[in-house]
Image (cartoon, rainbow, N blue to C red):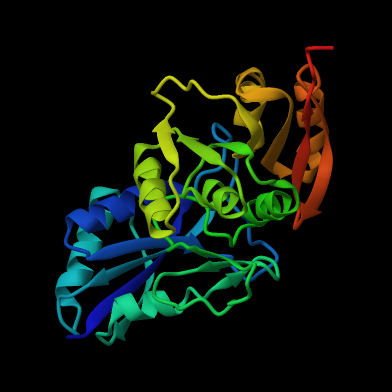
Length: 303
């Protein structure tokens, strides 16, 4: 059965509520994109917690309906929502989308990611293509938690782990998301890894991903009391929470142990290094696409 797609141009203030109301009115799905995507006015909204931003100034909302190809019911629902929101005019287009296997369509978008000659992120519907003796193939599907290897911050941390993890290291992955960094550390030779995240859904996803990769990792939420001190602590979060976490991450890192921080824009790196200076000797290790990875050692308090 074909579906009816209606795309509507809306302001930022209208888009969120309009989408919610369309779902209540019978839309199967609603998505919102930047109306200026692909133009010089395109704007990323990936930002810090607590920062202003939200949606784009000009939004393009697409609602999918199954009311038949004439779209009368869908258009009626759309205008009913507009009236409730006191919107006098709408700029919209309609199109027919043929039924298809959406699972296959979605999976086709996600191919294995070669992070390095040695490390590959492999969705579970693909077979590993890197069969070298020292290959690290991480089975990981796009899902509910951040960290699939596609974002520069995740790749920077993977590069660091590949270069520095040694046999027998203990690792803390703070802000674990999908668990990818803890999983990589174990496959690179770490003896033990613990992952922590504020999101219980992410923790469940990380546990599933660890099982898919045959590695034993303890994952906890931040609600649990963390009794763990690691040789290596890695935190791929964002600059604002990292500023607050400095003493906590220090308390969970061995004196002389290593710290890796990511999720930091290049212009934020200096502030992070300064904030962590009482606990760690840090410096920018590597940069990619406007993001910095900062690394160094905790001060050895035994001296």
